[in-house]
Image (cartoon, rainbow, N blue to C red):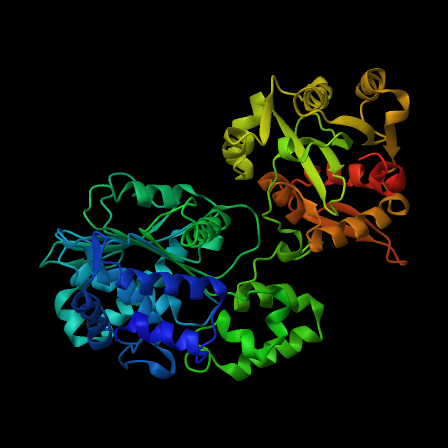
Length: 554
């Protein structure tokens, strides 16, 4: 029995507790072990060779284990076996080219990644291997690199193979190098990467460093990119993109028509539900080294403290339990707002909808919303469109570090010619929904401070009674906002998995008065937009006011 089978056996028996994603990954790996039709086979000798290298030559550099050999946990052995054991039948080259490991802090991920980096440098049989530890800042990239230096100095055998210099590790016998690399590094061109170690992906704001490393791998036969990280605050940055990729790959295991990428090994150790953070039996889901590398009592103390101080909860959830969270001052937690359900307007055949829009001239997004129900269906459906001034589009992508360009290609965002938003585009979009999707405006909510000429044009096109001004204050918005939040949590709001709206909702904070009345406001980061939520809330407020009458005609 190899380590993959052994680990999966413990998962199935309940001896170890893992997230649903990890269970599905190892179920898939065990199935691959017995797939005789695949062009890839499992070579246990190659897998064991890597594990033996680590446990023989790599030593802990500090702490209570300082100077002692690194002994991998079973979950690390299983993952190492998968990474290095699945190879092409004919060429012997590795199948996996990338691993994304999301795991709670203090589970030994950086030490393990360092060991793998040293293996790729010294023992992988590659001529002239270039290994890079990468981060946004070079100083941060040096964390794993410095650990590699310390490991070498602690190991007499590794010291014979590698020479530690001021800014690099050199191996003369195979002309290898191991260097730290940041976005602020001078050396980013002409890379020929055999191994890339990216630690704490959630902290990387500049996707360019990732792209540079991946682009630099194209000349190698079997390069390996190792990404190790805890969860981060949701900002739709590269972390969120890679997390979504992990989800897609795992979902593809059970869906013949889904996304498939057998070069990526997605290891997501996380709580399955946010509420599990107070259940000690579930802690291991995000902390596979709990009880060995990670101290149980210390974690219990953190949980106890957070139960008595709400300000500590979100950081604990994010860093120790890998619950993807919004920024600390945000109104929604990600689990409540996230809904991956989709719909086809043509199949639902809605007749009447309730509109909403949030206007801007330049800086912010402009968003239009149609909210609609369907006879006999308890859910509400949301269709939206966003606009950004064309002349500011590229600037917003670069400065805000938000993938508006990707969203535009997928049809979620449109460009408005010039430097300002042409508000006539909003009217045209509502007309488009009527002409293309047969959705007629029953009512349409708008901020009373909206551009008067657009409101007048909307009244002329859809009727005076259709347009409903929504006062932007706690008295007006508190009730609808709380009701909308409840419907989102209950997954009664199907927004077609719109990534722009999802991102906007992660940025919503609240202003609260002494009577617990609320209204939305932006978080402290001015680059984070809430316009999509504001547009939806205007529509929902009008829906809330006219619920009985509206539901009678759907």
